[in-house]
Image (cartoon, rainbow, N blue to C red; front, side, top):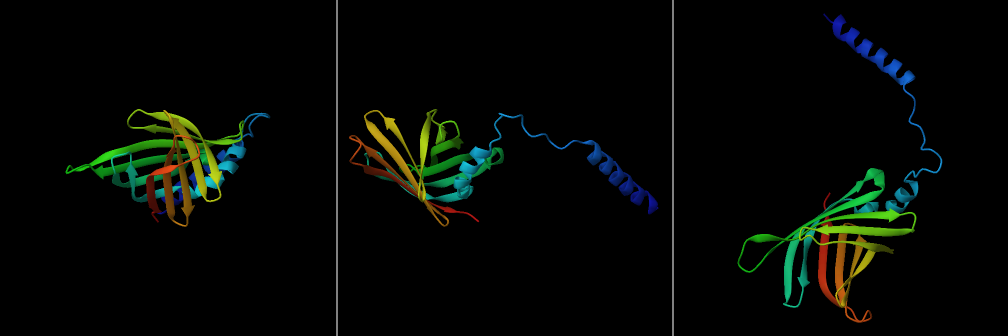
Length: 187
């Protein structure tokens, strides 16, 4: 009775050896085809973001500060060519139950042709955008125009902490903070 399992294992090993000898190694991409190497090397600078981050913050859109809490889940995708960033934040609005206040999906990638990092984002509200992302010594920054206001977000990372602030300016020189968020990376 012990012979059947042993024979099955030996047969499987023999078949695997034949398959390995007859299966060609994956071919290198044809000359001139993108390999993703430049993109992966550039995105390695942001690999520290991968993981789950949780915390809280506040936003003031003119009616006083409103607190929120939630998380950002960041995943390296496409063998390191892109970062997928999913945000899910809730707040207690008045005397109501906790409700979603910011649900977002973002993709950060490096555009080798332009030599720039890009940040595409989509909100559950239907809003979307594509922006340049500029790396800083300890994180990144991006900006957008919102009517007459210029909005910028700056994130800094230290150990297991993600600190992000949002500022607005009507003249491009004087900035007023309207958003702050502190998240901790989960083990």
